[in-house]
Length: 96
Image 1: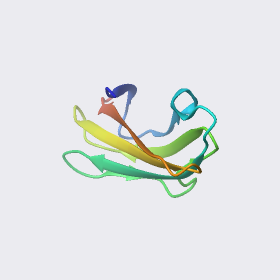
Image 2: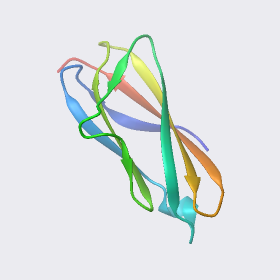
Image 3: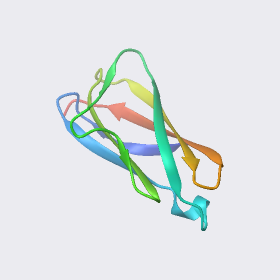
Image 4: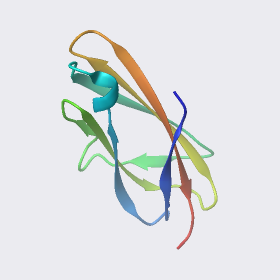
């Protein structure tokens, strides 16, 4: 599956980003969700509120990052039916 491009954020912003898995899940549901982040430095995952999921969506809160850098975020979900799926997103940091 190809990467999704999220709208850029400023390093000073604290924003939430959500993935909707419903089209890929069919009648299945999300049981667990983890995130892997790659980039030139630390893009901070906020713990308040913490990353979360519903039966069909996953959400992560992010802040920080380096201006003009791009981060690769991969969300890995395990479903109640025992499937493992992943989706990669790209997030750019741009000063506003």
